[in-house]
Image 1 (cartoon, rainbow, N blue to C red):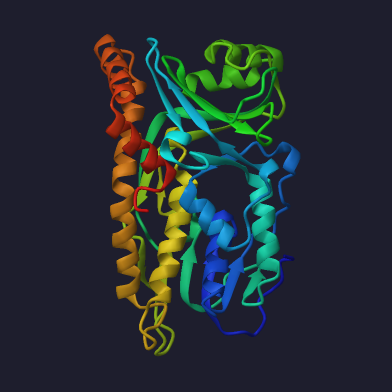
Image 2: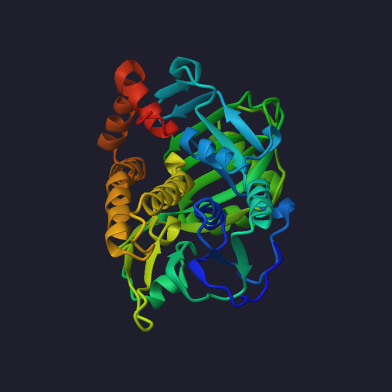
Length: 385
């Protein structure tokens, strides 16, 4: 939707940040007949051809986006039928959607396509007004991402644990079709993921390669052919000859969580004003499990549900409601945060005893039916279904 100055409307909610989580929240809250101002930065949209981002979305996220009529077409949301996870000493774990009686383990979604679907839905939702600057509202929801300026403005401490790794992302055109298989290698030189794109018969993958920071500049400066050759070697030639199909992007990795996810604002007369955090503004985890956006969308769904279920006389700014949301989401975040951090620490260490331990662990998971199924259902977002 075109970004316009706020009109003289009374808003129930002001959402700062018009990314995927912000737009999803706007649509969810608009369904409850709440009047929503969505603050979009007046910057040009990135060209789809150069946007290398792709997300692994689970069953719960897909159901949420489908309910908002914002799920991309199959060409831009590739179902993952199988997942293969390889250790660095021949160990491996294989997951299969058929074993879980599921249509897919996850869907790899092209970010520009998803953003376009959400933007279209927002455009046709009369309860949502896209504005160019924050407006007065009972509740301000901060969805600005991990570098949120509003979070800092509200004086919220953001506890950051930086990793020694950066993520490098790009796209590859592959000689062999990906076969709807997501592949991940835990290697001494980093954690590499190939995520299938372009539908069931696609020959394109999204790449996320977590490497030590001193490796980043040399890898980014390599000629495309040499970089593709590095990926071919790291992936053990799984998809044949590889060619870069997009620019390379890189960013530092971190685990982080806000000390507080909600709080009161300065009162305006007798009207209560509050704020709340959602998505990357509240928490960051390592991308190795592919759960970052799933957690952000779960924030959106939980917050909307808490506000929807409030007593008719309660304001959306009621701190009891917001603290309930904070408790629920922090409790849900904890096991995923611990698991991803533990795996990152385990697989980033070169010591021989740790190499033996992690490869023994992968082999154990592969042999253990109940544990393997539990891990699969956690990743799929169906453990509570």
